[in-house]
Every structure is written in C-alpha cells, then in structure tokens.
Image (tube, rainbow, N blue to C red; front, side, top):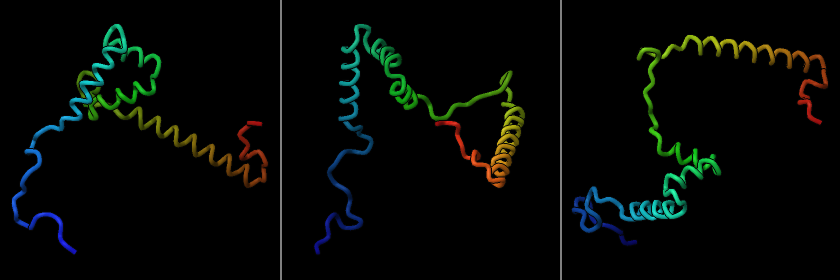
Amino acid sequence: MAKVGRKKGTPKTGGRKKGTPNKLPSLLRDDILKAAANAHPDGVVGYLTEQAKNNPTHFLTLLGKILPTQMQHTGADGGPIKTEEIAADADAFTSRISGLIARISAAADAGGSDAGDTGGS
C-alpha cells in the first residue's frame, strides 16, 4: 500500500498562510446581519427585540453565547463575596432532605403503601 502525504521533515507547501481568517464565516455573518436588518423596520436591534419577546428561549441561547464566560464579582464595597449565608442555607437544606429521606424510609419499612405516592391520580 502506498503512503499518502509528504515525507517527514519535508516543508509544508500550499494551503492558506498562517493567520489567514476563513472567508465563509465572515461572509455568512454579514449576510445574517443584512437579513436581520431587512426583517424589521427598526433594523437589527428591532428584530432582536422582537425575537426576545416572541422567542425568549432561543434569544437567551444567543445571549448566552455572546456573554463573557468568566465574570469577576466582588462583595460589598469591593471586598470578597461572603459565603457564610450560603453555607448556612446549604446546611439547612441538607438537614431537611435528610429528614425527608428518613420519613420516607420509615414509611417504606412500616409497609406504608403511600410511601411512593406522588398524589397524582
């Protein structure tokens, strides 16, 4: 079977130069913006506002893609964020869940037929 490609150590020839952007994405982006501008009398902003009202799920997906993925937050007066309240809430939540699990287990052990009942008929 014949080898395909260039020999090891042979310099690469042809193709795009390093750092050259793809033309298709920029052309497609321009066409999408033109279509959005033509789709609404108020242009792109008007179209996006209408989409936010009529299709909030899709609009929020778009918004999530353009927002920064990392944000820095600070607490009151620029200080660190306090997490004591969150930890206290988490402890209370864990305690309540543990209590519910114990009640469900006790009802199941006692042979209660309504232990798994969700109340829906």
